[in-house]
Image (cartoon, rainbow, N blue to C red):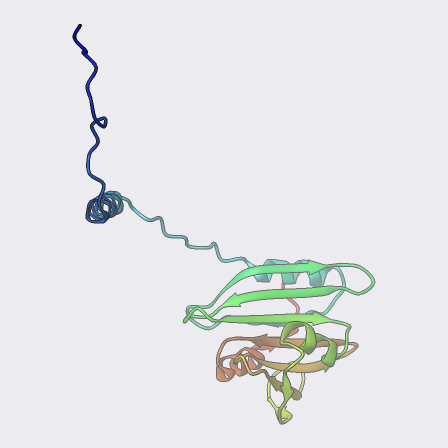
Length: 188
């Protein structure tokens, strides 16, 4: 009788560390090639936010009988990216702007104290600087603040409300924004 079953160990390929590393390198090269090919033929869309007509909002706020402070015009390259008005017993006006070099500048008007607004919008670690006199604005005297992160703020009490100009924009640009503020009545 003849035994047709093979003897010994079943056939196996040799497993080595070098073979494993070679397979990993080939796999990584294939993944990198796929990413590069997909990236070469992909067009990344650009996002250009629509500037908001903040003067229309100011006009409607004025028609409600309130006197908001607002920039008469924005410097070249600046635009308002968000504008909000909350009516009620304690109305709030907010303008969020982007400067020509992509910094943030904000204007907030509300009947809360300067210290409360600075804590909320600039930060609790903001330190007060010298009071400055700015001619041609809605208030002659402005308190100044800065925080360790590079944010600056100008704050003044206008009537029963506080106007806060703040942001990451350079202090000179924020001061220019303060100088441009007005409360003139707009025609609808």
